[in-house]
Amino acid sequence: MTALFPKGRLASRIGTFRQLEILIAVAETGGIVAAAERLHLSQPSVTMQMRKLAESIGLPLYEMVGRRMTLTHAGEMVVAHAKEIFECTHRLETSLNQLQGAVVGKLSIGIVTSAEYFSPHLLGPFCRRYPQIELSLEFGNRKHILDRMQQNLDDLYIFGFPPEDSGIDVTPMGVNHLVAIAAHSHPLATQGSLTWLDVANETFILRETASGTRQATEKQLAALGHTIDKHIVIASNQGIKHAVLARMGIAIVPALSLDDGEQKDLVQLPIEGFPLTDHWYVVNRQHKDFSVIARLCRDYLLGEGMSMVEDATRYWEDNHKPKLPTR
Image 1 (cartoon, helix red, strand yellow):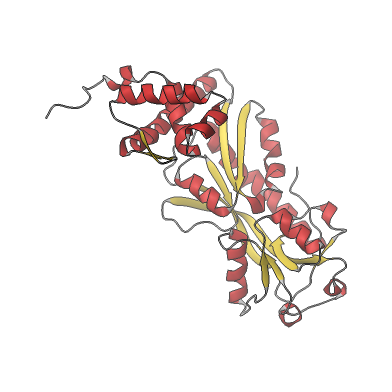
Image 2 (cartoon, one colour; image 1 turned 30 degrees about the vertical axis):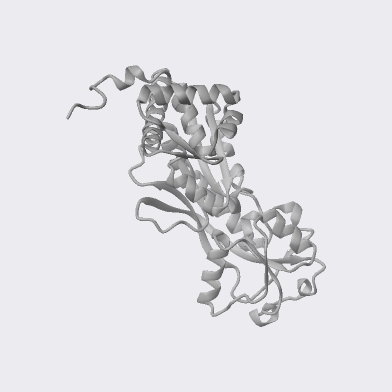
């Protein structure tokens, strides 16, 4: 059987890297319109470049079912290999910059929203040390970050409740204390000590079911023989804290998601068995071909970053007040 593409000819027929970039954007955003907005191009330009790429490949790359666009099998294959091509060019760029003695390049980190408050403080010293790095922080709920990891969109990930996946490396970065909070005006806020029976009939403000914080909370409570009966679901850490302030209920949140400014409005409830203890984790896909920058950042997070998390956690344990990790 004659090969569809004679060896060495496909690379010469694909027009530009830009066409591959457009295809990836269409695949990730789900359509021409969204891809055009992301890339600051006109819709006709995106459509034309997609058509030219399909012509050079010799197979349709997507199909329309009503208003819905889906990639063909060929389109999925081209997207997967296009991402490998861009990863390769990124590594080449980094290597060439190293020859010039500069640490330059791109670094993308996916971070669950429960860590969005302290992670910028954690990464601040790293950014100041390597100011020429183009850093991208992608915050999202656990499902969103898991989806990004499955698509290999980022170099590293920070989780509070890591996925159970044999294809990833999971390394603890520090203790994640889960603390119970209430508004200062709540009747329980003035109590010197509490048991679970004192709060069992309270309404708890919880994250969505798939949230790492919620899964860790329910797992730790189950180990203590406790369950939450009445609850309200809010899919936002900031929304949960405002709901607590509005006396809609009490909540269990990571201690490092609190800051000094909230101390005057919120109180940590002294419930027996609290804080619940989990960990923060640095996660990456196994056998990840790290760039120099990604490896530097991973080593930093598991070295200096871990020390900063430990210092902030120790401060909380000694003072029962929040402290963001800084250096």
